[in-house]
Image 1 (spheres, rainbow, N blue to C red):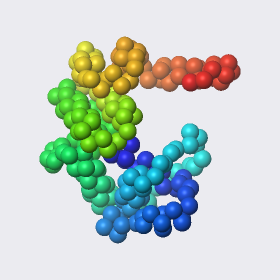
Image 2: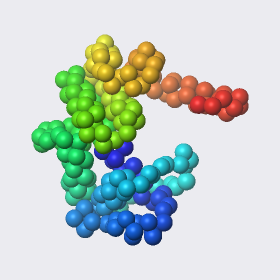
Image 3: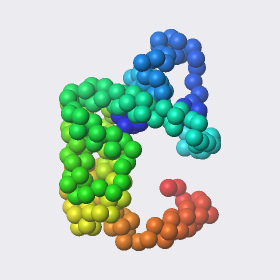
Image 4: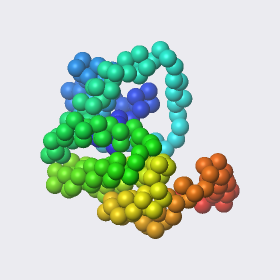
Length: 216
């Protein structure tokens, strides 16, 4: 969802240049090194964008790319795009709120229970603001927020398992990931079962589904 990050990966995009010109959309020089994020932020307000569920591009990371050479400026311009969208929801975030939003956007890991509660409170505030502003479609928006909270919760190994389940399961956003008991069970499994075992289990399940042609 565009409130956290670009909804499209720039090298993969296909569109009609005539549509961009007709919509008056182009790179903004004030969003240097985050021009694509700013462009898609404006585009999604005028048309429908979608991602194909298939890997079609291989992206190479290296020390000479923009995100490495101009990381500081890119983070600042990316923050500007996120701020505009938060304000459009009717919120006036503090610098601490923006720091937290950036943390959630990159799905920061290893947080304490107090920070996890702050993550939950901020995501619930975004959900409430969207219910009033109706800027993003529901229930997709609430589900996105719930998924962010789930990922951060599952990775917060510094927080006790009961604490994680209480913070995540007690949020009204958790209902967006139905069924809630299954989400909590998976959260427990992620914390208790070694990651290599979980990955092997998922690979085996995927192979079995492919052989039996069972839809996901």
